[in-house]
Length: 258
Image 1 (cartoon, helix red, strand yellow):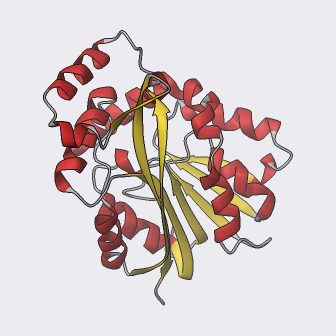
Image 2: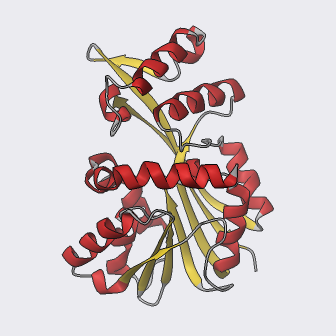
């Protein structure tokens, strides 16, 4: 199961690496500004950007720290990361390491800060990943998790995840906020900030890079037809006469206990 998920993630992001590098919804966002405002960044900080992809978070942080190492499972992201590094005046503060968040290839207590932005729903074992984040952090170091979430409602959570998996079979599971807090505690980290927000994406924007007319879209319509109306209304909304996907996010900052 682990190997199958790993290969699904690699295949999906290898295929769509350039699209994620150019995606406006990934290149921008208040969550990137939140990283700058809410993390204790200093000129001596060493940062790990876990599951960095093309490096949107890494290059946001680079001007404010000593070094950012981007960790990613997908070799296809390397060209996108290096392209951004060549275009950034702070590219010399960054580098990419191919590796798995479930077995981070760095010694204990290497980093002052770990960041993981919009990626954890692809992890087959999020507790193991959180434990690895805590392991490579120095005592008192901070970890920022930004990911899609749902309300603390198991039925709604199951509905959202079914839709996300139909769109992208490398998706594993978006966790509920209560589950994230539990994982932090199990990884010996204390939660010091927990922000939530909602954002309605036009249906086509949410689907990207998947086609509106592809087989994935057909499966989505079948799922929606079989979803109880009270759950569907929590996920699919109409704005300006068009269908939107209502996505919820969590921004959680934890600190490793000494």
